Amino acid sequence: MPRKSETSISQERMGIRLSSHEKLCAERMKNIQESINELKKEVKSLRQDVSKGKGAISVLVFLGTLVIGCIGFFQFK
Image (cartoon, rainbow, N blue to C red; front, top):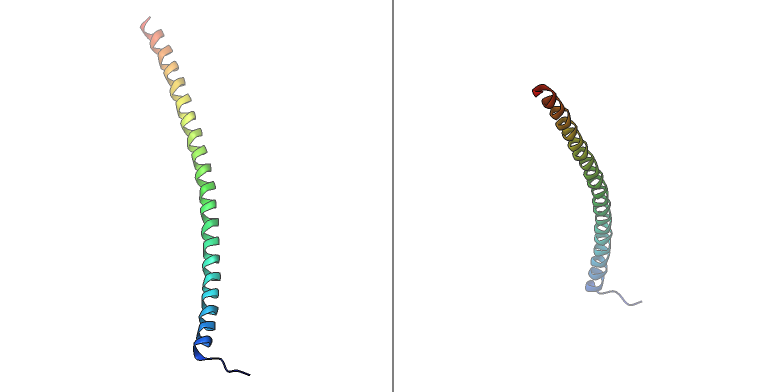
């Protein structure tokens, strides 16, 4: 049986190291992608909440303006 040279053994070990490193990096990338997707969903939800809040504030301002306008109209008469 031919004996493996030291360079082939070291190359095999390096290959094993690289493959385990690539697996680790792939797992990290998967976790990062999942986190990014969760953040996108949260941002979308927060935007909707802010839009609802802006709408509610504009309605309250409009109603307040109507009420103050009516009070002012009846006070001056």
